[in-house]
Image (tube, rainbow, N blue to C red):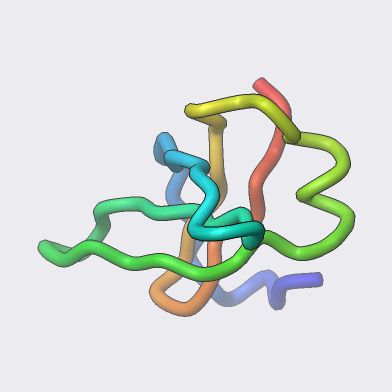
Length: 65
């Protein structure tokens, strides 16, 4: 859960596998960011290359379009 005072920006995130670990990458604030998908995201977004995400500087929350 994110605090209401944190600004979230809707953006496209790209998902991919590196070995057997699914990752998400996105561009924000003039830089590229990445992190592994959480287990619940892995199951929900398996096989999707591009998803809608709500991003902050720290972490995107991947959400269905």
